[in-house]
Image (tube, rainbow, N blue to C red; front, side, top):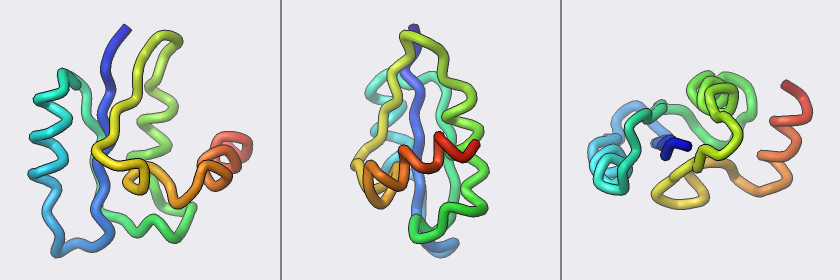
Length: 82
């Protein structure tokens, strides 16, 4: 069982440092990060890699739920389509 982190900012001029610091402090040893808008499902390669990396018993950690997906329905649809 592992804590796996995911960090995302919406634009390339935003900084991931704070999210990565929080995830590291929470005990995440593996962190996936990207600079990509959350409004599109396409192109979120780090999210896809993160979800593929997770194993049974792992815990996915995000600093805020909106960093992961715009809605639970979007996240569910992402998993059903991959």
